[in-house]
Length: 548
Image 1 (cartoon, rainbow, N blue to C red):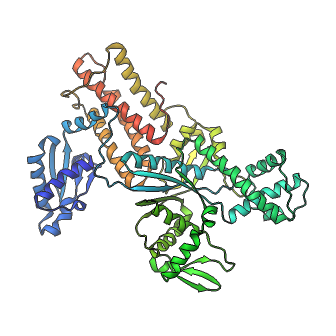
Image 2 (image 1 turned 60 degrees about the horizontal axis):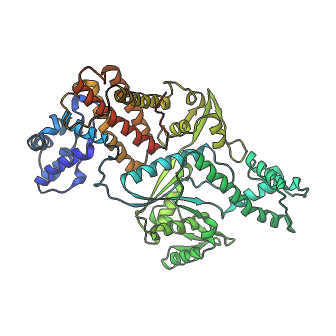
Image 3 (image 1 turned 90 degrees about the vertical axis):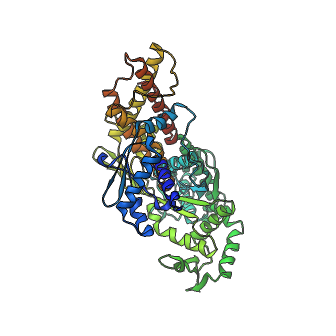
């Protein structure tokens, strides 16, 4: 609705020979005495037009009343220069009833379509995925689905960190637990080993039971032998878990090791050197990232000649651009904040600008009542996704883990999430969906097939019905907000509000009545709502419950 109202105000600007759409801002009001929507455009236009904001506001009011009177119940103007718009029932109903067509989706033609590389999850293949990875995975999944729904060409990527020190630590950890089973003496002690999760111990036992042999001469050679075997195993485990929580398949699994061996890294370093981006200091090679906004310069090649992690990451981002991406989105943990600037600065040195956007995920805690379930991947106490799925339904878990803004810390109380009643917001929505389906089923059984209505003269007179109409038309605004902020909690919160608004409407307004015409109009409203529910369930990746 915001976009439609913006287009009407843009008509006014064009009447002044002004094409600056950026001057238009339409906001949903919090207080209905200021209308359903308001705009501060007069304040933005004032300096450019050398005219008082209130005069401009009155001009916009007059223009809208003369040219778009059917869209508004009334329009008011308030200091210091706001135009407040009260939507007409006709506008609301016309927009809501579009959803009676199961194939309908809002028009996003005004959105510039991008070819987007969306990199998310990208957890190290050093053990099972834990709850932090789950939040990343589900936020990324819903965001990428919404971007596709809008019309973007979204290319989903998982970046596998299989070429750095973490793989050495993984292989060393597996060796530490496997060596005693094979009765091989080891120089390792528990403190020198990186990972102690039960999945590491279980994998060592599986290797032993399968007859796996360590037949190299030295301990280092045997650990090297375990690298590829261990990475392959845990990567397969990751793929199984991502499928279990309902993720679509990634378009590409990019291997850090393969990039290191491709020769592209040397070519990239050569290009940076030719551009004057590198210098030598303390035996290492540094890149001048500070020149392009980083907090300080960074080491690119260490004293021992080995590349730092960021080298391969830069190459991967270059490849994304070479593959035609007009935007790159990375979803990282909040502890990676400083890393963003160095990658962007490096890309600027190579001539690539304003293509990378980074979103961040904060920590998740699981509560069992008042007790916090502690997590540490290295100590082996992390709460794995597979453990969580034994405690609660997959869809319930997905719903709860995106119910709060991704950059905020969040807690999930298992006790609440497992409640199968209306105190649980997940089931509140599901009950609402079931109620909608029951109304439609009752109508079909008692009256017959739903007839498409071409005019609506009776609905929208009750306040609760107006509230429902207004809430439905907000859907497009929520989707468009996610085009910018990729925040699934917005969609979850909208879904909860939509269900609350519907239940309030249902308690006040009887759908199937003795008035045939009113019944037919209201049943079309319920059909539109049902189809909207299905759209949201699909975007979130949750299976609807139609009967409870």
